Length: 470
Length: 109
Image (cartoon, rainbow over all chains, first blue to last red; front, side):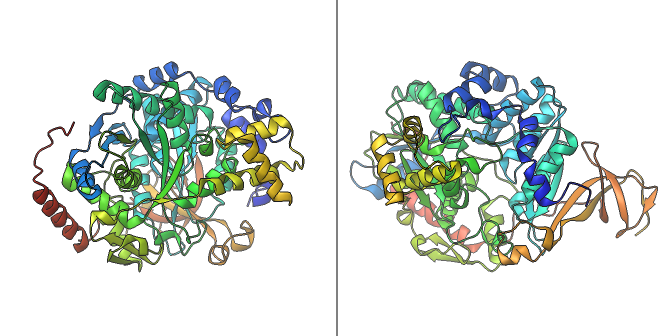
């Protein structure tokens, strides 16, 4: 190992490396206490909605179709009973150049990198974002490195991640593949230092701003096609950027009454840094292993202040099980003639359940789909799970145990989204914010910030803090 | 297998961190194995064999050293084996559709 390159040495240089690699001095927005000026960070370092739309239009990103799921709506109505069952609409984000909504984040990040004069971009991602950055780098003429957590110590690769490596290489990117472990971040920092490339982080203002166009378009399309506002928008939730960007775009379209729902696949019980658990999960993103930690502490990301702050915008958070998402993926193909996902269908599975709570005159929008293919496909994932000792059963999905079995519903009526206690997550976030800042007595501005960052109120924040010290 | 030549597209392997160099607070099974890495690129040496320590030039022009592991590394991921449960679900869904009398995609609105 070369000088100054031990794990601890490199991690201690994290702040400096990141400042150079992102081009943002986050200290400008800090108050020195808990609070920081989120909106000013988004404005001063990001782009306006019109600018983002222009950047994306130039590279063929966005303007994806909004499709009516007629047969899935009929099925939901049949299950829901008289007068119930909202219209289910799907924003077909798989139509983006790299096959997912991540093209929106990548288009802006790569544009910004080029504007600042960087020769290349790096992203640490095993998912669709890697393919999106690679695709945009190819279009905009920059070099690209994607760092993936790909294999377990037996060198068995998650097929979905292998597919992503293939796609990145097809776009000319260099793919660095690693075994399981959070030290991926260490390798990422070393590569940033070595190359001087731009960190195309998922969590910068330009990355999140890129998703605002999705929320904005969605509202415009619902108004144009159905002459009204969407009642509920369901976002698959992992790191928080999808939900944050979509919700911000919806607000920019003045859709103030629409409920924003986050949905994650329930993988509770599986450890994300575990070599043994790595290939016992059938979802590499959109799951609670990211969804909950990033909600309760967004600043765990690869930038000092994450622009993805889901608790600021989320109205309701639900989970669905792996078996339910696989079933819906099959239903989407068989009933609607669309092969997508499966991971991107997490929000579809949730929406199918939530639609049944609403009356027929409501509109519920699933705000993304993703491409499918070898490795990613539902059959690829299920047969891989079976080869890795996971039992595939038919039955009540409520009995599914992540890492042990996958329970495919026997009937679509068994698909039921479960609510996560959002207040508990908000309290946990407030606790983490206090702990990270080391502040014992938050100022008035801190309380205001925490209330905004949790979409709660000053009294909720004060009660939570009182509960911590009691 | 014959000698691998300069300019051939290859994959190399290296250990990034030995178990005792890894981060603390890892699950036990992760802590006891090394952090390993694979990178692809063109071979820089005139000639080499599998298992040799070599240098490659990656797609972004970086020079990386490691143990030569494969010539022309290929992707073998697939659509997996037949999953009978999925076929059953497709048939059941078709049954529900017939029962409901739904055919085309005419609007519900």
